Amino acid sequence: MSNMSMEKKLIIVFVFLIILPIMLTGYISYQNYSKSIKKNTSLYALQLTNNITDRLDDYIGDMEQISQIPLYLTSFQQLLEDKQEGLTVKQIEMENYIRIMNNIKRGTNSIYIFDNNNNKYYIISSGGVRTDLEERADEWKRLAKAAGGRSVFLSTQQLANWQSGKFAFTVIRDIRDFYTQDSIGTIAVDANISVIQNLVNDLETAANGKVLMIDENSQVIYDTEQKRITERIANDPLVQLATGTSGNFIKEIDGVRYLCIYSQSLKTGWKTIIRIPLDQIMKEAMKTQNITLLVTCLIVTFALFISILLSIALTKPMKRLMRLMKKAENGDLDVSFHVQTRDEAGRLGHHFNSMLERIKELIGQVYTIEGRKKEAELAALQNQINPHFLYNTLETIRMTAEINDDEETAEMIAALGKLFRHSYKPMKGTVTLEHEFEHLRTYIQIINYRYHNKFKLAMVDMHPLRHYAVIPLLFQPILENTIVHGQTEGSDEAIQIHVSYEISGHILTLYFQDNGAGISEERLAALNKRLLTREVSSGEESSSGIGLLNVDERINLHYGPAYGLRVLSQLGEGTSVIVTLPFNV
Image (tube, rainbow, N blue to C red; front, side):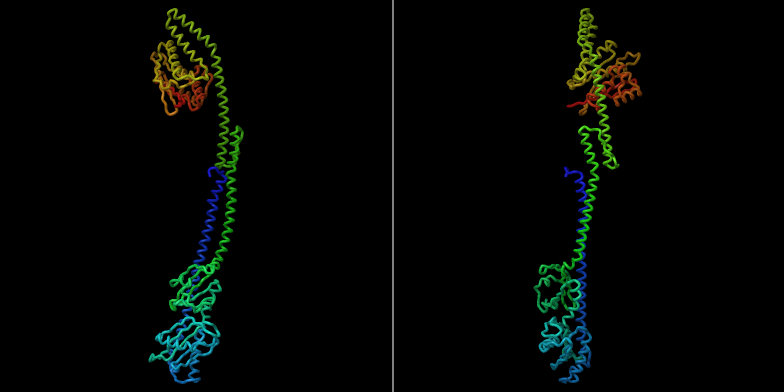
């Protein structure tokens, strides 16, 4: 990652910050929509199931009410107890009663009345009459009497050779005398299975669902394909999963996944199980998924395209700046970044241009300094006029003074010769700090011949620095400044010059302190300003010797701009010259 280009990094960032959230949002939206569809479908199917159950309960309740009619009609009960046989007035009147009851509820196929004399009364409707009536009559009577006047609900039965259908369910009741409560007959109300089929037809058509109804004994009352009616299916997976009074689950049947919703009737105990293919439910969700996927792909493509454009737009100035830096690195400093914006890239380009201008300015300064350095070295070379001839001459004068017993003159000449030897060392060379301080002692010795021992030079122990290399004649101008400017006119008081040092990390600091006349604030400020800006006046140099400014420039040229001189002074209390040099442990 760290070695990748900025453009690729930006594209990756855009992918993670824009594209992935869009894709994640689309995925979550689809999942939530799918769950919502399943939930709503389940609720809708459960409502349909409850509706079917309630309507069926109502229908069965109506059948029970029909079966109760003979219990309250005393005229009907008297007719039923009449002993007449054959096609008599009783037969006709009974059929009239049956016809009235049969028209109360649509869908009721047949009503059968049995008296205690084994007479059967019914009317032949468009649905026909049971062919198994003789077989069922005794069983119905027995079940009705056992119920003690309550209705008995018989689950779906298969009917052979019945014109209007193969299956029916029945409500039977024992007819009891209104006054004596004695059993006087039995009523059976038959309903075709088509009643249930009419109830579930809308669901099967609208949702392509399939319905399964079972009673409390897991016997099939109704199924959409009508292949399992009257079978006991207690081991069927759907029956085993449909626990409780209502709920839903997903089950795979023959490779097709179904959403199954079930509800149980509190009246009959029948349980209705509806199964709807998930593909049918998710048809709209799949359309939404495809649309979401298409929109997401378009958005992602657009976002990626914009990301690439933004990445190129953001990195293009940086690439251009890198090319210019490469040229500058190879030495072409005349290049320039064309600043067009005020953003970070524009400011960086502006700073790059400023840096190149500063580099060219510094190069010009180096050329100037090198030229001045060469001039200073040439001047020093010109001042070395046959130094050996001067040494030999001074030595001859010193020996003549000794022959004439003038020891003071001989000492002065010896000190002067020693001073000249040190002064004429090559300007490019270096000397040890011990040698340089020995030169300072010799210089003060000569000065004191002139000023009658007015200057006292004191140094701390310099033994740890004795091998430290410095450029020659570095400190003599500092003492010369004290001698020239440190004396108070008309005062014979001795001037103390104290030399000390301090090492802090890689910095060596030398302190030259005197108790002379000091410097006024105006002159001190002007001097320190010239030291800070490295401004050297040729007129000042010619009037005051090498001078402090010359020493500061030499330090700057030799050691770098971080090192040099700083002057502290107070009028009437003395002056301190602070010299900073690099110190490598």
